[in-house]
Amino acid sequence: MRGHLIVVEGCDRSGKTTQCERLVQSLQEHGKDAELVKFPDRTTQTGKMIDSYLKQTSHLDDHAIHLLFSANRWEAMDALKEKLSQGKTLIVDRYAFSGVAFSAAKGLDFEWCRGPDVGLLVPDVVMFLDLTMDEAEKRGGFGEERYEKRELQMQVRKEFDKLMDDTWKMVDASQTKDQVHTAMLTIVNELPAPGPVRSGLWK
Ligand code: 2DT
Image (cartoon, rainbow, N blue to C red; front, side, top):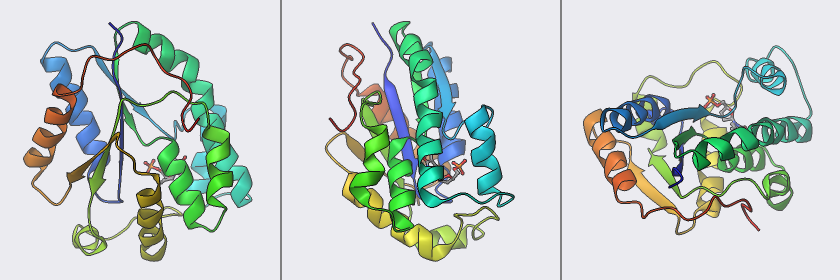
């Protein structure tokens, strides 16, 4: 049986990355073959350009960086497909939904933003770690990278709303770390057995 493709999206400061790591660890402890995947993958050629853009050491046109984020996913698709077929469950920290939400929040056309990612692997579930801006700021404010600003983050949240459908599960990220973890684990454990790997996101 193939593994599940589980995407985790969420607001800044929602604890998304920590929770993804913990989820993988828990699944492994329960005997599941699970692996963490992170987008952007900053280690590849496209990833290095993205990293320098995010750290504000380089400037790129908004469309160009959008396409780079998408290319950074496409170059990983064959390997991810292979892993799923081998029965690995993949926990994916950010995916095409972040791609659209951030670029559309900067003012690019929403439909144009979806275009480059049409056809990617379809996740079995998208978990959204939800946190209000006030709660996010209580957690120590935003960091130094390009997108870590209140106004932009508010707009990003609105764009995420437009992308939600019935494959999304909301997780209240204002709960304790343990509660968030339990909620995520429950969602994963309740997923139905997956069918064949599906390409064709947004088709
Ligand atoms: P991390 O802080 O999670 O490394 O993300 N982003 C991400 C985009 O603008 N487009 C995308 O396609 C993806 C995956 C979100 C770094 C920042 O990059 C943004 C935050």
